[in-house]
Each structure stands twice: as structure tokens, then as C-alpha cells.
Image (cartoon, rainbow, N blue to C red):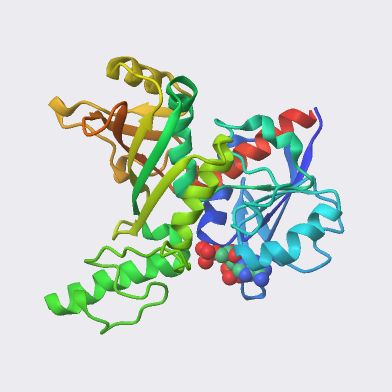
Length: 345
Ligand code: A2P
């Protein structure tokens, strides 16, 4: 069997470290790995599959040695600079940043939804935004059967999605509150914030990323535009409100959908429960529904609170939770590499 060579760029970050874990679990036919980060981490050690690797500083020559695949998880600027260099050297890049997602010649892939698009890559494949990935996994089988007319997204997003600095802000907020026992500290700027404009501890911030001219945040427009691209419905009516909440990991989403076709709620639930990588957790009599704490550590998308929206014809509400660092980033990227390997083997 052919063996492959993979580079992981951003190996020391939150997503990078989870990608290492997922790669260890998947045991893909890859026999050479290289790990890159910024100058800051160059020389540090990573233990991977029982072997110590030295993290190397990424530079213009990093891809000279010929990699088959690279997973980039080092932000948009790094991707813009280095992904084209990697692609020129014949390496297929799976990039986690938003740098290339909306480019016409870059496939935006969720393996459960649009794997057929992978073959259209020109050296770069984009991994979608975390909150979009989990939503489209749940929406695709529903769209195939009932034809989606409109979507209203409301998200409750974990701090891990904002990287190490986001986690720091929550942990530091908890620490300061615990040490002072002063309720005011939770609501003030009396301690250092590295990532968010306001304390995330004891708060919900209706701002993820920057505001755009249309009044939406960049995160909201990512959800709207990426959903349209992945589902192949460029004119689909979608609106979104994305909110950062004081949860360490796993994004929760309230999704309201209007369909063109009528549906039977039990058939719809049955369809969800049988769909790839979806776990239906939906038993209100037992108070069972998806939780961030149950989604963390797995690659499935948990769906529950599935119920008719009685305010419109063919309307549905559901609650959708997934590990934003695994399925929302690292696992999705590794699954794309897995598909690429299947195509090349
Ligand atoms: P480093 O650890 O050296 O800063 P997170 O979003 O969790 O903070 O992680 C960002 C990841 O991207 C880290 O692995 C970080 O490496 C890496 N990174 C940031 N800037 C660069 C760069 N210019 N070149 C390579 N890797 C980078």
C-alpha cells in the first residue's frame, strides 16, 4: 500500500494539538510526519505515536522536501503566505482558516455533505468554519428530503474556538472571581483580557470576530455564505446571530428551518437518527438532549429538541451540539485527508 507524507502547520495550537490526537487515533497510511509552528515554538518537542518530534519554524522552504498533504491550522495570514507555496510543490493543503473558503476554485468540504467536491481542488481545500460544519452535517439529510427554504441560526459558542487566548480569558476570569469572591469583578475589566473585548466569564458576548458594514459579524456572514456554498444553494435565505458563551468546549446551536415540503416529525427524527455521524439525543420525558459536555471528545454531531415550529408552515426547531475543535476543525480536516488518501490509493 502506498504511504504518504504529511505536514501539520500550527501543531502547537489548540486545533493542531487535537489534530495530533485525531491522527494518532485514525492510523492513516502516513509514514512521515513533520510539525511546524512559529519561531516561538521552534525546537520544542512533540510526542506523537510514541516518538519524539522537534517542532520546526515554518518558512518558504518548508515544502521543498515534498509532502503529499499538509493540514494548516495557523490562522489566515500564515495560510495566505504559505499554502500557495505548499501547493506549488505538489502538496494538497487542507486549511482551517477562512483565507480561501469563499474562493471559487477552492472546495469547501464537509466529508458527510459534499465529498464529491474534493476532486475539484487545485492544491488547496478549505475546512469550513466550526459552527457551519456541525450545522450542515445535520441539515444535509433534511435538505435532501424536505428542501430547505430558510434557516435561522442562533449559536452559543465555546471559548476554545478563539484559540489559547480565548481559553485564557475564561480561565483567568474564573480565577479572579474565585480569588476575590467579588461579584463586580465578574462584570468589570479589572483583570487582563487577551482575546475578547469584554470579560467572557459570567457573560454572553453577541460578537464573534469583527463587525461588517451590514451590521452582521464576520462569523455570522461566514455561517451564511459557507452554508450556501457547502449545500450548493447560493441563494438560500439564511440569517444568523452568533454568540460567545462561557463554555470551554463544544458549540451549541439553535437551528430553525423552513422547508418547501411537508414532513412527518417522527419520520424526520428517524431520518436524522440514521444519518452519517449524527446522534439523535432527544427524549424530553427523560430530560435527554445534547449538551456541550457530552459532545466534547467525540466526532459526532448531537441533535435533539427536535420539534415542529408551529408559527410557520413546514417549520422545524432543533438543538445541535458538536465538539468545535474536533468535528468543527481538526477531525474534519483529518477526514478530508482520509478521503484524499482513498482517492490516491
Ligand atoms: P506558536 O505556538 O509557535 O505560536 P492558537 O490559535 O491555538 O493560538 O494556535 C495557533 C497556531 O498557529 C500555533 O501552533 C502557532 O504556533 C501557529 N502559528 C502562528 N503564527 C505562525 C506562523 N507565522 N508560522 C507558523 N505557525 C504559526
